[in-house]
Image (tube, rainbow, N blue to C red):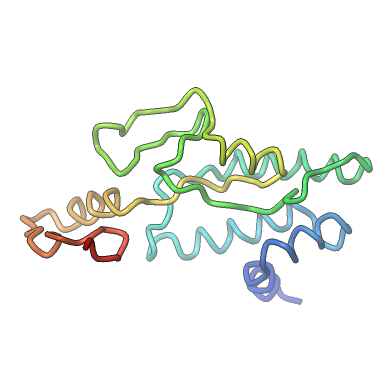
Length: 163
C-alpha cells in the first residue's frame, strides 16, 4: 500500500475503528498521528482549519501511548485517536485565542473539563481549530481591504440564523 493510500485509509476511519485498531496493535498511534498530520499539512493551506497546530506535542503523545500499549499497560478508550479542539475551549499550555485579537497571547493554565476527559481517555490533541471570528480575522488580514459586515446582521457565525 502506498503512503498516500495509507493516509487516505486512516483519515477516513471513524474514532471507534481507529481506537480498536490501535488497542489491538493493527495500527500504531505514531502511524495514525503521522498520517493525520500528513493530511493536515497538505490541506491546511487551503482550509485554514487550525489556528494553533500542535504537531510536535501530538507526535510526543503518540509515542508515549505506543510505549504503554507495547508494554501491555492499561490505556483509555480513545488511546491514540487524534482530535482537534475548538479554539473557544481552554487547553492547558496551548494558546487559546477564542477568535479574538484581544486573546492572541492567552495560554490557559488549566484544561477545560472536556479536554481533561479527552486526554484521560487517551485522545491526542492535534491543535486548536479556528472559530468563526478567528476566520474573519484571517479573511480580513488576507484581503487587506475594507469589508462590509452588513451580511452578518441577524446571523450567527456558525451558520444558523438567530431567531
